[in-house]
Amino acid sequence: MSEYQHRARKRFGQNFLHDAGVIHRILRAIHALPGDRLVEIGPGQGALTEGLLASGARLDVVELDLDLIPILAHQFGNTPGFTLHQGDALKFDFASLGSEPQGLRVVGNLPYNISTPLIFHLLDHAHLFRDMHFMLQKEVVERLAATPGGGDWGRLSIMVQYHCQVEHLFNVGSGAFKPAPKVDSAIVRLVPHAELPHPAKDHKLLERVVREAFNQRRKTLRNTLKALLDSEAIEAAGVDGSLRPEQLDLAAFVRLADRLSEQSTAHSAQ
Ligand code: SAM
Image 1 (cartoon, rainbow, N blue to C red):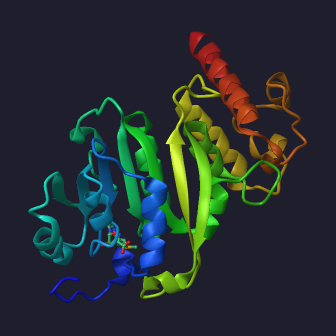
Image 2 (tube, rainbow, N blue to C red):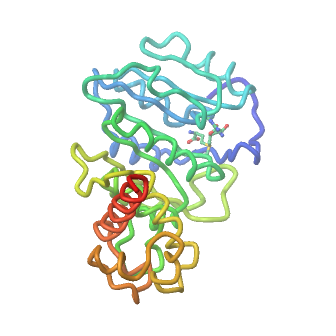
């Protein structure tokens, strides 16, 4: 325990883990080994940091709250392999940590207010990472791990599963945190695919098609995509335009995006 006192700040999404059983379960799931190169986002007061360092792995941490920096420096500053970065993980240049041949391992009990943009930021550099373990709102983990056909399947599921294999590991009740958040949480493991199972010709167009399709998830694809693809183009991609977006799997979205890519190439050649 630190001799410093720190009051949890809502604006930084601070809910500190204090349940030793949960902390151990998370550390076991991560299973850090000497020789690993870890990055922890939002170490806070070091609930996970201590166990991560005890593994003998190298650990870089990125913490935004200036008040926590001296606490972390005091607690871990002399531990070999520990590097402290003060800053916003949303702007952090993960490539600056060097390209580890085995990939960086990212860990974080994430501030819930920035978890989705942070995951998208990390996906932009997915090739750098061996795996990622996050504590998130349970509802977000359910969306990440969703399968087509249900209400959880959407932009987040598709864009994350495009890059990564997703495993919902276990749930964590709000009593494990101080202060206790209003919602339940869960631990998720994301493992970037060594080779994309459904590579799109243009990844940005996939994002566009998916965003457009789910803007109005109750409508048919023919309707939601009409600004991008007409009925014939949708059918040529092997997709039934009368379906709703949540009924389509990742491969079908990639076919639509590839169709849009071919269409754009044909137009620019005219
Ligand atoms: N890891 C600690 C734990 O499990 O007790 C703290 C988790 S707390 C939910 C989230 C942490 O992320 C806080 O320490 C907060 O200050 C930090 N944080 C919030 N926004 C951040 C950002 N944009 N970049 C880096 N750290 C951030």
